[in-house]
Each structure stands twice: as structure tokens, then as C-alpha cells.
Amino acid sequence: MPLHIIACVKQVPDPEAPASAFRVDEAAKKVVAAAGVTPVISQFDALAVEAALRIKDAAGDAKITVISLGPETARDVVKHSLAMGADEGVLLTDSAFDGDSYTTALALSKAIEKIGDYNLVLCGRQATDWDAGVVGYGIAEMLGIPSVSLAKSVTVQGDKVVVERVLMEGYDTIEAPLPALVTVSNELGEPRYPKLQQIMMAARKQVTIWGAGDLGLDASKVGAGAVRLNLERLFQPVSEVECEIVEGETPDEIATKLAQRLREQKII
Amino acid sequence: MANGILVAAEVSGGAVASITLEVLGAARRLADQMGKPAQAALVGSGVEGLAKELIAHGADQVFVVDEPALAKYSCDGFVAAMEKVNAAASPDAILMGQSDMGRDLGPRLAFRLGSVSAMDCLNVTGEGGKVIAERPCYGGNARATYSFNTSPAVISIRSKAQEPVARDDSRQGQVTKVDAGIDASAIRDKLVGHQEVAEEGIRLEDADVIVAGGRGIGSAEGFSVLEELARALGGAVGATRAACDNGWRPVSEQIGLTGKIVGPTLYFAVGISGASQHMAGCTGAKNIVAINKDPEAIVFKSSRFGIVDDYKKVLPALVEACRKLKA
Image 1 (tube, one colour):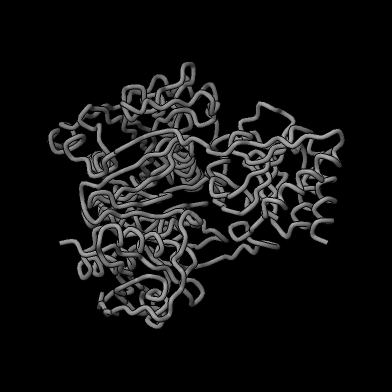
Image 2 (spheres, chains in turn blue, cyan; image 1 turned 180 degrees about the vertical axis):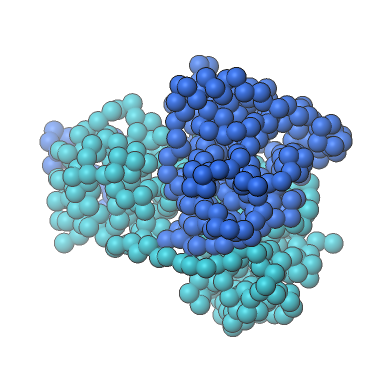
């Protein structure tokens, strides 16, 4: 049996969009989608797919299934992953999934169990919208498999996964028996960019769609009815600082003035 | 019945980690607001002697799990040990640092306990008996505050976001040993190697002055004047992702959402536009000085002082001016 790797991917607002286009609807506690900015695959999740492809390249053979949970539009990030080189795609979409990280992790773990016969689950270290960094751990806990986070490299050696885990200074090498879950960090490198031919092939591939019922989940026991973390408030922080522009006729004058101001304020 | 605010303490090089002292400060304040004790979990091997340090820094009660299998951090080992401490302490909330350990331990522990985590928080308060955590999201563009429907609330605190309480060796506290019975063979995530990447000079996280450069620097050579300014002020050089992606600076100097989180007294943002990806890493800076040719650059909005000019003209003069001041 070739390795079966499952990569979890999320669709997010483009984090490279200009900060000036960012708006929060405080009453709705939601971010307002900026006009003309196309949502993208979360950057760390693209690296989870990349890590899966590198393992496949090294092994010569492996099957990669990608799963996303989100609205219908999230099909685009499944297709993007297929175009990168993944073999099969699943989209979990159901208004019942509209909850917090508990529901997301539960639905993804149920989908992974339903797919079955997996050796390795890969996730991004966090999604670049909420930056929470928790869903991967929830999936591992619910599946009862070991988790290793913040990978800069992931290799499969026999029946174990070997991960270089990024630390503040340096890295640890960690081994865990398969099946296991690994979250991937930006130090892994760059995700491959799909070629036109791959995009065309991916466009023809079917994406399997599952809702709460397909996963054996009672819609009343997930989502809004099962929220553990209440979002009380969402707002844009207002910077209290007033910027004092230091001016002068010559660079020397400007520099001297700034240094003096910093000294006066006891900053240096 | 929930009994207090528990800190998962971290030991680094045989001493209590500095981030743990900051988290203890946050826990002490939260515990006082809620009229509950501040508790600490001290998990490791040969760590029992550090309990008095935790008490001196604000803990009323310390739960010690001191076992050989816990000599190094592992997710399986530490989650299992914290599960035992949680049962003994039954806290309202478990706080920890957003560190190599905390970011891995927190979410899995929360799911293990049937609860939930809020990671990388800037602040935590007790309002009307409820724990409220505040954290940045959307790459620092937004802030969210959360309350918790389940307990314990697991919360990690960003470094440099909270102040420790002053050390007081006369403080009294209770030390309780907890037997977790961790069997090394049951730990599935096994540490098999470790590689230090030695940084030259001052660590960015510890630096009091940081001179950071972005895309506007234009080249690796352009950074030499930033290095001079950093040297003149006894600081360190940092960079944006763009500067690192271009190979002008090593990735170890990257500051931002996908790099280091820093909190110096003085932060020079040179040739940096102020994209949230970067600013997320320096929100803890006490004073930002922006130097940018573009008067519209968004970085000026978060800066205390600004210079609208070419860094190549201003920075050499600034190096001289700072050297004179320091002399």
C-alpha cells in the first residue's frame, strides 16, 4: 500500500491585500470582504500540501487527499491543491459547521475517519485569518494520534514521521509513529506554483462534497450550538500614537534633532 | 468548583523562563480581580527547587510534577502531566507563554480537557466572574476578545505583552507534589535531535533597540548603515519578510507574523511600508521611529517619530548624532 497523506486547507481573505482595504463590521463581528480581493488558500496550508508533495516525490508513490471546510467558494482552494498535485479533494460545506474551532476540528476528524486508511495528516501551523493555530491539535486529539507542530521539514521513514520542529532558536528533530498529524511552518520553503496543464487537469476533477449528515454528525450538536469560545468583540485597534515628523534643512539637522528628541524623551 | 488561575510554568536552562514570570504577572492580576488564588504547575525533571521562585513571583500554590520522563518537553508527556495537575488544581483558567512549549501544549491540552484555547493573547481580564482574553487576528489588522463557555479556559500570552510582578522572597505559598506516573515509552512524539542556531550579537527578543529594514533598503549592502546604527545604540538588526525573501538578511532576523515577535524600547522601521504582516511582530515596541521616503506609508500611523526622507541620506547622519550622544 502506498502512503496516504491527508492535507487540510482553508480559504482565507488574501493577507497581501493592502491594509487600507481591511474593514471590520463590529456589529456583525465579522471582517468585511474587500471588493476585488480574491480569497486564497491560507499560506501555511499551501505549505502543508507542498510538504505532502515532497514526501510523495521522495517515496515515488503516495496518494494525497485534500480536505477543506468552508463555504461553496472554498472549492477553489481544493482545486488549487489538486492543481499543485494532490490526487483527490473533499469539501465539507454545511451551515451546521458555522461554529468555532471545536466544530471545525470535529468535522475534519470525522471526514478523515470516513476517508480512512491514512498514514499522515498535514495542516498549516495556523490559518492567516484568525491566526488561532489550534484546529490541527483538535484533529489529532479527536483521532487519538500523536501531533508534532511547526515543521520546517517532514519526512516519512518506514513506519514513522520525522519532523524538524522550528524553535525560537534552532530546531528539534522529533519522531512519531504513523499515523500522526504534523503542522507545517513557513520555514518549509515555498509552495510549488501550479502549471497551466495541471490547472486544466484539476478543473476536470470531481470534488466530493460532504455535509454534517454525511459525517454522522447531529447538526444541533455542532456549529452554533456547540460553541466553546465566544467571540465577544471584533475591532480594529486604533493606534494612540501621534507621529511627530522631524524635519530640517539638511540630513545632519534632521538626524541631530531626532537624536535630541529621543534623548529628551529618555528613549536613548 | 473552579479554584484559581493556573500557570503552566516553563523551565529553561535550569531556571524559570522569563516568559513564565510575565505570565505569572498576568495570572496574579487576573486571580486578584476574580478573588481566587494564583496557582502554578511546575512540570519537568529535577525542577522541584524552582517552586520557591514561582512563589516569589506571585504564585500562592505550586503543583510540582517532577519525573524523569519529563526532562524534555514532549506534547504527549506534558499534556498528560498537565491533565493530572488540572485534576488536582481544578482551575478556572490555565495560562502559559506563547513559546516553543506553550503554543504546542495549549491547544492539545484544551481539547484533552474538553475545553478550548485562545492563543497568543495580549491581555486577560476577569469581568463579572468571566475570564476575557484579547488577541490579535487577521495578521494584526484586528483584535478579538473572547469569553469561554467551557472550563478551564486555556490561554497563551505573547511574550513582552505582560509585566511580571516584583520579586518578593518573603511571599509564602504552598507546594503540592503531584504524581503523574508518566511512562517514557508512552510518549509518542520523541525528541531525537536538537540543533541550536547560534545568533551573533544580541538576541532580537532581548534587544532594547532594534534597527529593522524592509524592501526600501534595496540591497544586502544597504543594510550596513543599519548595522552601524544598531552598533552605535547597542541594539540588533531586524528585517521584514521581503528583505529576507530577497536574501538580503538571514531568516533568523525576520520580524513579523511569520518571524519573531519583539518588544524593544526603541524600534527603527527603515524603508518599511508597515504591512500588517510585519507590524504584527513589533506591536510590543514602546517607541517606533519610521524612516521612509513615502509620506503616505502606513508605518507612520504606528510611529512616535517619523522622518520623510531617503534613509541613505539620513541614517549616516543619525549614526554620527547617536555616537555623539552616547560619547
